[in-house]
Length: 398
Image (cartoon, rainbow, N blue to C red; front, top):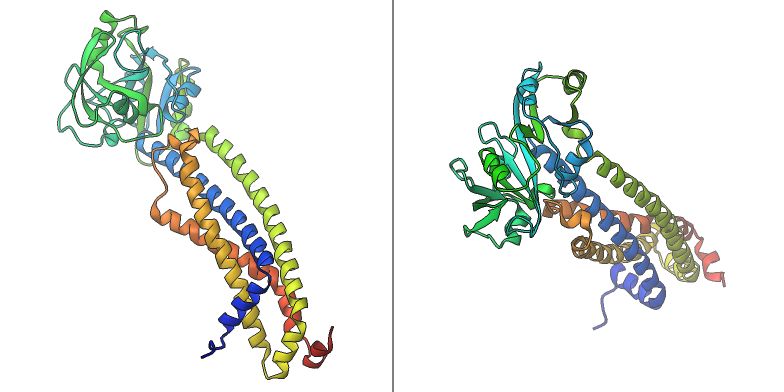
């Protein structure tokens, strides 16, 4: 029995007439959609990770020594090891500033590989357990108690480097033995390579090593503001009254990285606009050629009783088939690239979170709509001309 005649079967047969032409169009759509998927995945993941890191700091303002703003951002965002110090007496002075609700502090010490300890080069962070609201939110499993003297919590990468896993072990830090008792979630910042200890250990570190720090020094003060307080006003008051410090607002952390990302995004948008225009011309040219080849066929269809709507459905189905195939292929290629290349991009492999399944589905849907939309829009002009042909004129046309 012959196959039943349907618009779908006829459209697919028509596409098979010129396989090379159909393949070129599908390949062009695949590349364009793949570029879109990869770029959206890149931007989404970076933005989400920076927002997460900023949110988990728990502080509205960071107070650092004058000139150390860049160094503080290096630690918190760009995974670099830095050390800087200011007078510890500033803690009480900052606490008294109007609008400040809570303050906590940390002290950064650089552990040099092979010089003083049995772990790779790391940032050792001494924090105040009584006031801390920065380290605790990152703990994978709650300890249920305070860190004891000689105990440490390690960052995600430090845990891997010293093969910690779930096993407690001893390591030498600045000539002092420390037992590793906890692991932080991946943050995508300098915290990943850090080792966290209670600040009560600093005196022993100073005695037993060549660490360049004094007992009355700290590195950074984290400040939480009272609800409804204007952060700009508090920031200005601190910087005006304390010449030895600079203040960084939480929303400004990673600002330079976001600006760079914004430039990359704009370049991508410009490239996508050019690619879209090129694709539109390609679709228009291909469907114009198809329309010219099918003039007599359409005339015969119309003479046999086919309406304009039938002609539109037939050609629209061909457009949708090509657009769907190219878009789906582009989604698969773009998603694969975003996963595989992320392992080689420094800015991506150190990020604390990956794209969620829901976000990937949203990005894929955007790619599908974009690819099929380009096909439909590019085919409108030749399709509109074809459906309005007079049957007799179309049949006689050579």
